[in-house]
View (cartoon, rainbow, N blue to C red):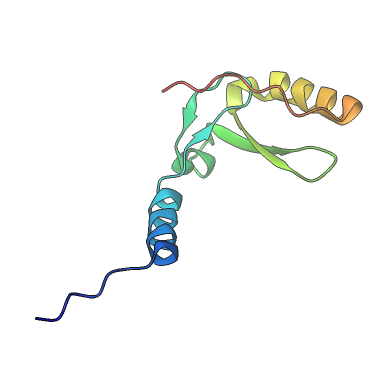
Amino acid sequence: MKREKRLTKRERKAIDADHHHEHQHIHCISCGRHIEPSEFSASPPTAKILSCEHGSKFPTCSSCVAASQKLLQEHDRTGQPVKTAGAWH
């Protein structure tokens, strides 16, 4: 009997990577709260996307906009990575 064809290591990695991209977790950079994608388009929106001077985009809760802007200003001034809060659900 002929053996069934197996996937190569590269093919297995590609399939595994596709599965990881389906479940994207978004967290507020200021408080770490989990943000659902639908919150950005809700009426009124409960989440926003802020940009730094370099053009990178960062998610934040509507209630944390001021604190998140301070974090981004520090990032722009110092050139260090944004100091984000730990994620929680």
